Each structure stands twice: as C-alpha cells, then as structure tokens.
Length: 565
Image 1 (cartoon, rainbow, N blue to C red):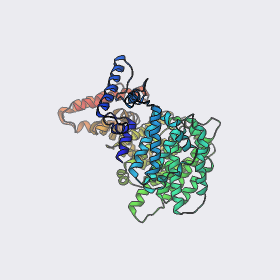
Image 2: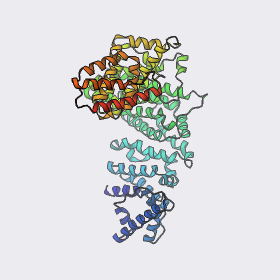
Image 3: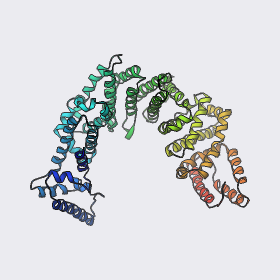
Image 4: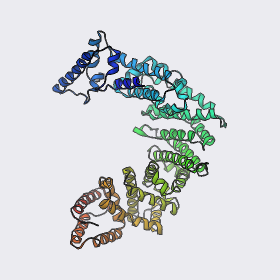
C-alpha cells in the first residue's frame, strides 16, 4: 500500500517526494538535487522569456510544454533514452496488472483506480493511455473479467473503473471498439430477463447498473451520448423497468438503477441533442417518468422491520428520483407542449407521484437530511418556472401550500446557500407570473392566469405568500453571512413580491420603524424611503437592478446604526 502512495504521487508528479523514482532509477541524493535544480532553472528561464509555465511546475515535468524537460534530465542521469510515452505506458500497464493481483485489498484497488483516473483525465497522459496496447485489449474484450469487480467491499468502485474505460473509449482512435465493448452488457441483460429474485441475479443487476453509470457519466460528446442512447433504447431501457418491478424494495439494486437513469437524462455540456424531427427526447422523458412513477407508488407502501432503515431507504430513493425529474424537466430536449396536445398525463402523473412521498416526510426529516432538502428545493424551483407552472398549479391547494412552506424553509436555511438560491428563484418566478397575470387579465388562452389568481386568493396560500415579503426583509437585515452574501439573489423575489403585495411591505415597514428606539426611527424610515426610491416595480430587468443597488445601500445604512431591533 505504501508503494501505491508513491506510485500515485509519481504519476501526479508532486514536488516534494520522488522516492519511487529515486529507487526505480537508482538515483543518488546528489542526482535528485541536480534534477530538482535543473527543473527549477528551466522554469526560471521560461518565466524570464515570458513563456507560459505551470504554477507548480507539474506541466513542465510531465512534458506539457514545448519540450519534456524532466525526461531529458532523466535520460542524462540514467544514461539511456527516457521517453514520456514509454514511461506513462509502463505506469498504466503496471496499474492494470496491480488490479488483477490486489483484488482482495480495498485500499490498493482504490488507489490504483485513482492513479488510472489521473492518467485517463490528463491531457498528454490520456493520449498515451488511449494508444496503449493494453487499452485496446481491454476495450475489445470483456472488462468484467477482473475479480475485484465481483467482491462486495469493492463493488462500489465499479463505476469509477468503467468511467476510466469510458474516457479511453470515447476518442477518435478507439470509438471503433464501442460495439465490441458494449456487447458484454447485452449478455448480462439477457441473464436478467427473468422474474427470479435470486442473490446471483441481484448482484448482477447491481453491478450492471454501476458499470453503465460509469460509462454514461463520461459520454460528454454528442456523438458518444447518441451511440449510448441508441444502444440502451428501447430494449435495454425496458429491461431496467423490469428490474425495478422485481427489486423495487431492495435499496442495493434500486439506488444504482436510479443513479443510472439520473445519468441517462443528465444533459451536461449540452450532450443530449436530437434532430427536430426526432421524438427521442419525448421517449427518454416518458421512460424516465415511468420509472419515477413506478418507484414512488411502490415506496409509499414499503414497510421495513426497522423503521430507521425504512426511512433511510426511502430518503435515498426519493433523493435520486428528484435528481431524475429535475434533470429531465430542465434538460431542454423535450417539447412539453406535445404532452398537452395529445393529452398525455405522464408529466403530471410523475410530478404528483414524486411530490406525495416527499411532502409527507415532514420538516423534521427534511431538516435532518440536507441533501434531500436541497434536491427538493431544486425540484420545486424547476416546477415554479414558467415552462412547468401549469403542472404545479394542477396540484391540490393543500399540496401547493406545503410546497410554499418548504420554499420558505429553504429561504431561511442558514447552512445551504444552494437551497436559498433555489427557493428565491422559485418565489421570483411565482410573483413575476402573478404580476403579469394581473397586468394581462384579458389574455388567458391556456387558463394559467386564472389559476394563478385562484392560488393567490386561496386563504392558506394567500396568508403564506403575504409573509414572504417580511421573511425576505428579515433575512436581509438579520440573516446570516450566507444570506448577506446573496443579496442579489434575495433582491429579485423581494422586488417582485413588493410589486405584487405593496400593502404587506408597507405594513412591515411601519412595524419595523415603530420597533426602533426613538432617536433611530427617522433614520430607519429614510432608509426605507431610499430603498424604493426611483424604483417603478414593473419587474423589468433594469428595475430589479436598480432595486438591488438600493438594497445594498439599505443594508449598509442599517449596519451603521448602533441599535436595530
């Protein structure tokens, strides 16, 4: 294990410790000092010439610059040529051999994979690894023959291993091996095409989902994702539905499966791009929503012997489902008007099926699971966008009221700035759309404006929305550092809420001014007057920017007062 520390250190070429290189090349202390001196002198010369050098000199040592200085110096010390490609190729082969030997030792396997990932992620080292013969051999046959993949303590590292192979596969030189590389998974899907709940099939389904997740995570180019989608749809994606039907109550299988679906619908780096005449985006969303709906409808009936384990299983699964729908709704590869045209209720069904178990958890559970709470705030923020407001307003008033309460909790969160930003964006969209609904009363072809007015006139929702102005003002004045550092994000919903409910703002202003000591009331009242000065509250972009500037001055003015209660 100590050897792997040195090997990983050698691959990343740290400056302090070259013990492995010293031992491997039989270098003396004097040689090591000379090597360090030569590298530093070369960097100093490049800086004097104005050439671009790495801040840590790692790029120069690995040969990322114009000439591989480190390998030239090593060649002089060793008395024989030392090429960068040969050295990295030997590192890579040694790491692969170590994976076949140290199958029982988890730290060694983990460090081998970290080193392999460093090679596969580097600019120069990646090209060398892609051309290595051992890489071509791995991609042209079943990579699942490594014994460490089948060991339970190490099986969670399968995604990392296959992501490394994916980085080596998705390049111009190795894309020809894609069909042969993916053929091994076709056989695994055939083995899972049965309703048996044996332990062998359980482990095989878990490993298959983790392997495919690792490959999909690194398919960042459009042509690579297109090839993966063509392979997975429709038969293999339908097999995932069958696996979920069989193992819906086993978190060991369901969680990797949901992670795979979350990776499949993730449009990172705009990799999901279908032609205008293609319905693949709609097909992808329908299959993903089917999986989410099926899981959420089953998990509400799930009962475990241990109540704590039952809750943890539900929380993890719901967290992944929130990621799936959030990514699918915001992926920008689905025309959701098509569902309305053909009266397809898959969007409403999936949203409702996911909201019911999430909102039933309660504030105590959500407060103790920060990741779930953040994912839920992100999902609600996406639902309150203009594109999906129709699905939100299709829910019952009771459910919408619970959603508003969760968003207010997200605003008040002093530990998660992402939840604060997501909740602020949701309220900004909601108040902004209601403002436009009031302004354009006669234009309501879709009935959305009427639904918004009904929402704001509902007794419970109206009381909650009237408190948003006061909550935002309290966060700006008395909030933590996370809120003070996000004045821009909080100013947006504050401006739109004041534009919609001016009475609530005036009532808060009067209460706040009257709560101050006598000598500060006039100063605080002037600060409130300057806050709304020259602001028309027409929710335009420039008007919001003007309000944001006034809000920054307002906060600084209140900080200058000695006592503000």
